[in-house]
Image (cartoon, rainbow, N blue to C red; front, side, top):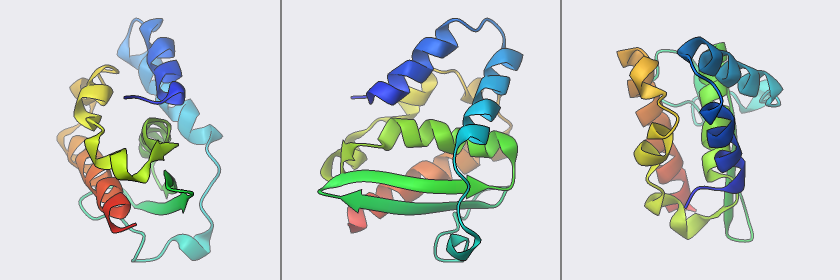
Length: 135
């Protein structure tokens, strides 16, 4: 059920042998992502449960889900970029059916994230699901 953009990330990761290369790739994905305007970095868009500052803003058009996001931590910006690739373009009614844990498991990210980052990742996924369910 993964999007083409996410499948491309999975393919890129398949060529990377060690975590440092994967970590650098995630950071690069975050650097390429456009920053969120400061006006959107408000309590209503902030994700609780993350060690870093994280903001997610849904964008739903024609029943299709997408979101923009930002963080004050480079690795977390990269994780947001990965999540954007996973969810962008998914019909809003199908967002809850995306098995984010299984899909992200293909990247083996959680094996190398701290407990706080893993909890933050879960909080972001839950927020994405909640935003889609409210649409």
